[in-house]
Length: 164
Image (cartoon, rainbow, N blue to C red; front, side, top):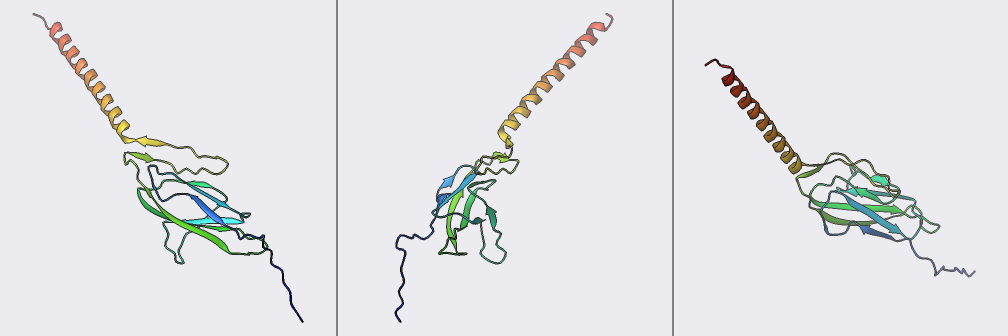
C-alpha cells in the first residue's frame, strides 16, 4: 500500500504585523495600537506593562485602538491575534515591543478616552496648569486694584464729609 499526499504550496501561514507603537519616544499620553494580519482576525488582546504570570490582565479588542493616559516612562506591550483558518486552529500569533512616553507634566488628562476604528471618541478635558495659574494671578490683581480703589474712595469721601 502506497500513501500519497499533496501539499498546497500556495498556502501561506497567517502573519501578524504590529505597526504601532514603534520603539520610539512619544510626546503624548496617547499612542495608537495599530496591527494588521494576513488572515481573518478571530480575536485580539494585549497586555500593557505586563508580568507574564497567572495574574496577567489581558485586554480584548476588536480592532485598532488608541492607548490613553500613558504615564511618562518606558512601556512594554505584547499583542496577541488569533487568525485561525482551516490549517491553523487556536494558535495565537503574537508580537511585542517597548516604547517610551515623555509628556509635559504641566498638562494633565482629566478623563480617559478611547478612539476606536470607527472613530468613536469620548470627550477630552485637558487642564493646562500654567494657564490656570496665570488666570488666577490676573484675577487676584484685578480684585486687589478694585479693593484699593474702593478704600481710597471711601477715605476721600470721609475726609470731604468732615466739618471744618
